Image (cartoon, rainbow over all chains, first blue to last red; front, side, top):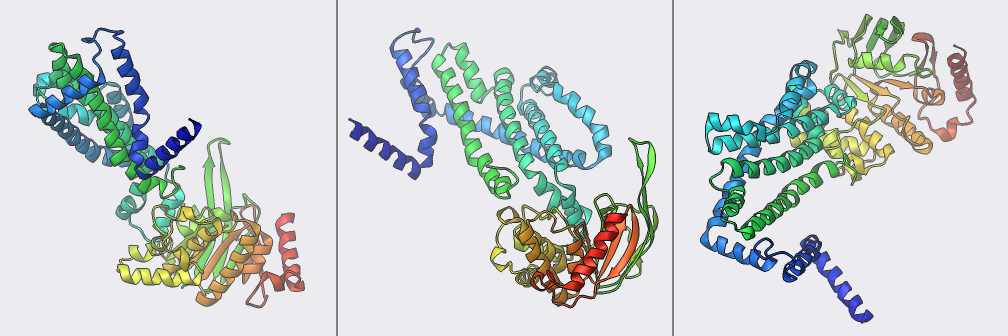
Length: 269
Length: 252
């Protein structure tokens, strides 16, 4: 028995070394197993807590009907559009506030004030202004993404050692080139942190917004399922949210971090 | 390379805690000829780094004038290369890109500036490190990069602010010997700030002893070159000169 276990363990180690993604799936196995056992034991009525098999079946049928791919695409496009504008506005604003004392004095109180009015708190007035459409959703996501990006960019810009500015100046860098050569790369690790937070909040805001004003998307799918009493689809929606974020984080954000701050020794591993 | 003239330089600033004006640098005058190696030595707080920062143009001076090649200093510029105590290498640039940074800002083409950078890296025996990032190098190697990065931009004056203060004693001696070798090969005009009397005498043609923001005395160092610690450690003239400078700095 011991022999067999050791052999099995060795096999697992080799397998995860060969395909690292298996290692990141492994932690979910006990969770799914526990879920399966609880549903099999019929602790709760099946209508309230369906098992993994039913969720997988519902996933299959929703994909087959084309609803899930379409909703998924809608949600991802909305997040991407919102994130794009959040980044495109947030980084320059953060650099301005980080570099200029005057801009900081003028804008900092405003930033803090508007940050406090949470994204969802804007929904009532946005619905009156823009109706139940893409504009409302985009505004909410941009609003959510922009604050973590701005605040972290400011932090990043201000944490660049003054000697780096001085070194670049005495090597002949103009003010414009300083932005590209010193300020932006120096703030980049913080900017990525801001993006990570911003996208995380943006993702949640998107789902909330879809629940309230959406006509499609993962949030809408879940809310629609509640109306029709389909707990399976609600669970499916929740699982998809988790998986999608995992993919965004490990396929997009983590590689950027590895290639920048970690490579440059600015962030300790 | 051009000469540097400092006339009646002073720096006064307002200390908000004490509520009074503080004079950090007091009426300093100094002439550094082309190709000369001058060390300014003094205890911490004597105003030596303030002088260097004013020459570099990082902070404004409040009195007197600073002329490089006859032109007054108005701010930082590529005519005055700076080597920092904290190295100040760009962490996101490889060693080669760091050294090529000055020429890049001048608009030198990529192939040409990389050739320049390789030449200077070879001068400091850093050819192997060209593709690495600063964080992957030891402190001594990082400062070698710092020195050749400043030199590769061919400044009129090279300003060095306690560049070897944060490396270990053995590495420091090697770096000092290498600096004298590179200086003899390229003959830049150098102003070198240090609190280490032996270092000042070892490197310089002329040592300026500074205390409380004033120049105490200028001492010419007539030791032969090339200099090495092996030959100078027991050299009577070296001991005599260092003894004199040490006495000056400590008595003030």
